[in-house]
Image (cartoon, rainbow, N blue to C red; front, side, top):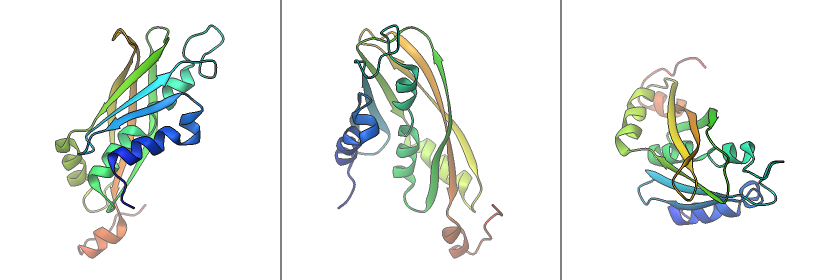
Length: 162
């Protein structure tokens, strides 16, 4: 069964860590350049003072940049989420939203930079907003990209030492 953007959005929303954390993937674009994710602040995702738990806000941003890059680059590349930073701007209440964008041009650039098995680290940024559009948090995620060794070697190149 082929993974389509719609199937992945449903699957990620039902994935146990997201399901019980109030995280819902609303959509992936058909070209894998965009994703929309929501966090529903509820009894399980609130902190002691009744606002969104910072760990839940971090979790709602965890895999989405790397997944957009991975689906655009295809199976010939290793893609990982390596680290993240979050700046909390104001208390989060209700439904929070994060939009993730990886333009095709950026994916092509990463593909070129990783050619030959080179390690590439790239930062991506998004904001978490509330229903009024106010920024609740600013988030940066670092994505690792490398062409797989078998691909580099099949091209006649020597893969860099790990």
